[in-house]
Length: 234
Image (cartoon, rainbow, N blue to C red; front, side):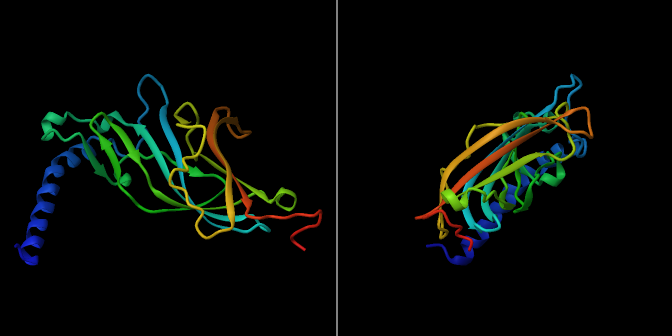
C-alpha cells in the first residue's frame, strides 16, 4: 500500500505534467488573441452571444420593499476564431481553460440590479467557441404591486451589453424559459410560479443604433398566502 507521502508526490507530479501539457497552447492562444478587442469579422456580422440563466435559489425576498437576492449560474457562449488552433499541433488537445481577463469578454451586465460574480475560468474549444458559467449572486428590486391581492411578486432581470449596439453584439437567449432543473426553494416561504426569457430589441434617445437585451421574468407566490381585501402591510 502506498504511503500518504507517496500519493502526494504522485499528485504533484501529475499536476506538473498537466500544466506542461497546456502551457504552450495557452501561450499560443493568448499571443494571437489581439488583446481584448471585440472579434467582429471583416464581413461586418455582429458577434453572437448566447445567454442562459440557471436558477439555483431564491435566498431572500421582502414583500414590502421587493428587495430580493437570487443565486444563479449565468451561462455565456460565443465564438472568437482568433482563439482557434489545430489540435494535432498541440497533442490533440481540443479544449483548454483561460482567465476571462486574458481574452475578449462580452460586457453583458444586469441593468436593474447588482451582481456578485465568482471568478471562474472560461472553457475555450479548438474552433474558437467559448463557454463561461460564472456562479452569480443577484440583488434586485421586484414588483410587489400584486402581493396584497394575490400574494405574488414579479422579478424582471434585464441583461444586455453596456456599450455594444446590435450591429456589433447580437445577444440571444438559447431558451424561452429559465433553467430550473437545479432550483431549490431553500428556507424561504415562496413558490416559483412562472419563469420566462424574452429577447428584446430597443432604441434609445441617445443613439441611432438598436440595443438588445434579454429579460428573465420570475414570478413567486407566498406559501399559504391569505387575503381578505385588507393590506397585509398594515
